[in-house]
Image (cartoon, rainbow, N blue to C red; front, side, top):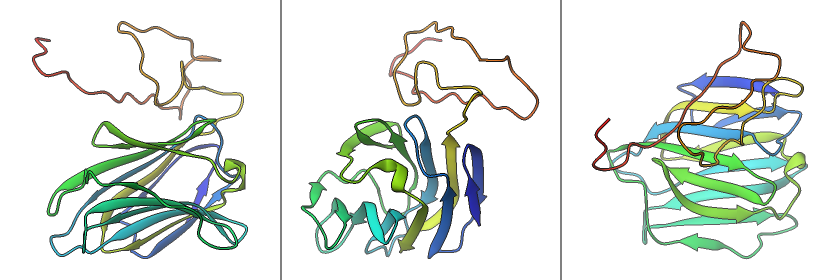
Length: 191
Protein backbone atom coordinates (compact mmCIF):
# COMPACT_ATOMS: atom_id res chain seq x y z
CA UNK A 1 0.00 0.00 0.00
CA UNK A 2 1.15 3.55 -0.69
CA UNK A 3 -0.03 6.80 0.85
CA UNK A 4 0.31 9.38 -1.89
CA UNK A 5 0.98 12.79 -0.42
CA UNK A 6 -0.17 15.42 -1.08
CA UNK A 7 -3.81 14.64 -0.47
CA UNK A 8 -5.93 12.33 1.54
CA UNK A 9 -5.68 8.56 1.67
CA UNK A 10 -7.45 5.87 3.70
CA UNK A 11 -6.43 2.29 4.32
CA UNK A 12 -9.20 0.18 5.83
CA UNK A 13 -8.65 -2.87 8.06
CA UNK A 14 -4.88 -3.11 7.49
CA UNK A 15 -3.29 -6.43 8.40
CA UNK A 16 -0.97 -5.95 11.37
CA UNK A 17 2.02 -5.80 11.16
CA UNK A 18 1.48 -3.08 8.58
CA UNK A 19 3.89 -0.90 6.63
CA UNK A 20 2.97 1.82 4.15
CA UNK A 21 5.06 4.42 2.37
CA UNK A 22 4.44 8.15 2.66
CA UNK A 23 5.56 9.46 -0.71
CA UNK A 24 6.94 12.98 -0.43
CA UNK A 25 7.30 12.81 3.35
CA UNK A 26 5.42 14.75 5.96
CA UNK A 27 4.90 18.50 6.15
CA UNK A 28 3.54 20.91 8.69
CA UNK A 29 -0.27 20.88 8.60
CA UNK A 30 -0.62 17.20 7.77
CA UNK A 31 -2.31 14.74 10.14
CA UNK A 32 -2.22 10.99 10.58
CA UNK A 33 -5.51 9.52 11.78
CA UNK A 34 -5.94 6.06 13.29
CA UNK A 35 -9.17 4.39 14.35
CA UNK A 36 -9.09 1.02 16.06
CA UNK A 37 -9.94 -1.15 19.05
CA UNK A 38 -7.79 -2.19 22.00
CA UNK A 39 -8.09 -5.98 22.54
CA UNK A 40 -8.73 -7.33 26.06
CA UNK A 41 -5.46 -9.30 26.02
CA UNK A 42 -3.21 -6.48 24.76
CA UNK A 43 0.38 -6.18 25.96
CA UNK A 44 1.55 -3.31 23.72
CA UNK A 45 1.49 -1.85 20.23
CA UNK A 46 3.54 0.74 18.42
CA UNK A 47 3.28 3.11 15.51
CA UNK A 48 6.57 4.23 13.98
CA UNK A 49 7.25 7.01 11.50
CA UNK A 50 10.43 5.94 9.70
CA UNK A 51 12.89 7.13 7.10
CA UNK A 52 16.47 6.48 6.05
CA UNK A 53 16.84 3.56 8.44
CA UNK A 54 15.81 5.70 11.43
CA UNK A 55 12.73 5.52 13.63
CA UNK A 56 11.93 9.22 13.48
CA UNK A 57 8.98 8.96 15.86
CA UNK A 58 8.11 5.92 18.02
CA UNK A 59 4.66 5.88 19.68
CA UNK A 60 4.39 2.89 22.04
CA UNK A 61 1.44 2.34 24.43
CA UNK A 62 2.33 -0.41 26.93
CA UNK A 63 -0.24 -2.18 29.08
CA UNK A 64 1.98 -4.63 30.94
CA UNK A 65 3.65 -4.71 33.41
CA UNK A 66 2.87 -0.98 33.88
CA UNK A 67 0.48 1.17 31.83
CA UNK A 68 2.31 3.99 30.05
CA UNK A 69 2.96 5.46 26.63
CA UNK A 70 6.59 5.68 25.53
CA UNK A 71 7.73 8.18 22.88
CA UNK A 72 11.20 8.03 21.37
CA UNK A 73 13.49 8.32 18.34
CA UNK A 74 16.06 5.77 17.15
CA UNK A 75 18.95 7.27 15.19
CA UNK A 76 22.13 5.27 15.76
CA UNK A 77 20.46 3.91 18.91
CA UNK A 78 17.47 4.81 21.04
CA UNK A 79 17.46 8.30 22.52
CA UNK A 80 15.98 9.49 25.81
CA UNK A 81 12.41 8.22 26.30
CA UNK A 82 9.51 10.52 27.02
CA UNK A 83 6.70 8.85 28.98
CA UNK A 84 3.07 9.53 29.77
CA UNK A 85 1.72 7.45 32.66
CA UNK A 86 -1.94 8.41 32.21
CA UNK A 87 -3.28 5.75 29.80
CA UNK A 88 -5.98 7.11 27.45
CA UNK A 89 -6.53 3.69 25.81
CA UNK A 90 -8.81 1.13 27.47
CA UNK A 91 -9.01 -2.62 26.92
CA UNK A 92 -12.04 -3.64 24.87
CA UNK A 93 -12.74 -0.05 23.77
CA UNK A 94 -12.50 1.73 20.43
CA UNK A 95 -10.26 4.76 20.00
CA UNK A 96 -9.39 7.61 17.67
CA UNK A 97 -5.76 8.70 17.58
CA UNK A 98 -4.46 11.71 15.65
CA UNK A 99 -0.85 12.77 15.07
CA UNK A 100 -1.01 16.45 14.08
CA UNK A 101 2.21 17.55 12.38
CA UNK A 102 3.31 21.02 13.48
CA UNK A 103 6.53 22.96 12.98
CA UNK A 104 7.34 22.20 16.63
CA UNK A 105 6.59 18.48 16.68
CA UNK A 106 3.81 15.90 16.73
CA UNK A 107 0.71 16.92 18.68
CA UNK A 108 -0.94 13.70 19.88
CA UNK A 109 -4.68 13.50 20.48
CA UNK A 110 -6.61 10.46 21.73
CA UNK A 111 -10.41 10.55 21.59
CA UNK A 112 -10.36 14.33 21.19
CA UNK A 113 -7.96 15.14 24.04
CA UNK A 114 -4.35 16.18 23.64
CA UNK A 115 -2.08 13.79 25.54
CA UNK A 116 1.42 14.94 24.53
CA UNK A 117 3.54 17.08 22.23
CA UNK A 118 6.63 15.24 20.99
CA UNK A 119 9.17 17.73 19.65
CA UNK A 120 10.97 16.91 16.41
CA UNK A 121 14.38 15.31 16.93
CA UNK A 122 14.86 14.52 13.23
CA UNK A 123 13.39 16.78 10.50
CA UNK A 124 9.83 15.68 9.71
CA UNK A 125 10.54 15.85 5.96
CA UNK A 126 12.68 12.71 6.33
CA UNK A 127 9.63 10.56 7.19
CA UNK A 128 9.00 8.10 4.33
CA UNK A 129 7.02 5.25 5.89
CA UNK A 130 4.57 4.27 8.59
CA UNK A 131 4.80 0.99 10.52
CA UNK A 132 2.20 -0.47 12.91
CA UNK A 133 2.99 -3.55 15.00
CA UNK A 134 1.71 -5.28 18.11
CA UNK A 135 -1.53 -6.38 19.72
CA UNK A 136 -3.87 -3.93 18.01
CA UNK A 137 -6.96 -4.08 15.80
CA UNK A 138 -6.84 -1.15 13.39
CA UNK A 139 -9.90 -0.24 11.31
CA UNK A 140 -8.72 2.94 9.57
CA UNK A 141 -5.38 4.56 8.85
CA UNK A 142 -5.50 7.95 7.10
CA UNK A 143 -3.01 10.57 6.05
CA UNK A 144 -4.66 13.94 5.66
CA UNK A 145 -3.28 17.13 4.17
CA UNK A 146 -0.18 18.12 2.35
CA UNK A 147 -2.01 19.65 -0.58
CA UNK A 148 0.25 22.14 -2.35
CA UNK A 149 -1.44 24.96 -4.19
CA UNK A 150 -4.89 23.74 -3.21
CA UNK A 151 -6.87 23.95 -0.03
CA UNK A 152 -4.81 24.67 3.03
CA UNK A 153 -5.88 24.25 6.61
CA UNK A 154 -7.40 27.51 7.88
CA UNK A 155 -6.26 28.48 10.40
CA UNK A 156 -4.39 25.16 10.52
CA UNK A 157 -5.23 21.53 11.13
CA UNK A 158 -5.46 20.80 14.79
CA UNK A 159 -5.85 24.41 15.87
CA UNK A 160 -8.78 25.62 17.92
CA UNK A 161 -10.96 28.19 16.15
CA UNK A 162 -13.57 30.61 17.43
CA UNK A 163 -17.14 29.76 16.52
CA UNK A 164 -18.62 30.93 14.23
CA UNK A 165 -15.64 30.56 11.92
CA UNK A 166 -15.35 31.61 8.29
CA UNK A 167 -12.27 31.20 6.13
CA UNK A 168 -11.29 31.03 2.46
CA UNK A 169 -10.94 27.93 0.30
CA UNK A 170 -8.26 28.82 -2.25
CA UNK A 171 -9.66 28.25 -5.73
CA UNK A 172 -13.10 27.30 -4.38
CA UNK A 173 -14.52 23.88 -3.59
CA UNK A 174 -13.94 21.46 -6.48
CA UNK A 175 -14.89 17.90 -7.36
CA UNK A 176 -12.77 15.43 -5.43
CA UNK A 177 -12.02 17.81 -2.57
CA UNK A 178 -13.17 17.14 0.97
CA UNK A 179 -13.75 19.35 3.97
CA UNK A 180 -13.22 17.73 7.37
CA UNK A 181 -14.57 18.99 10.67
CA UNK A 182 -13.41 17.65 13.99
CA UNK A 183 -14.68 18.86 17.32
CA UNK A 184 -16.03 18.02 20.71
CA UNK A 185 -19.45 18.98 22.03
CA UNK A 186 -18.93 20.69 25.41
CA UNK A 187 -20.65 19.15 28.42
CA UNK A 188 -23.95 20.92 29.01
CA UNK A 189 -24.24 22.30 25.46
CA UNK A 190 -27.83 23.16 24.55
CA UNK A 191 -27.51 23.19 20.76
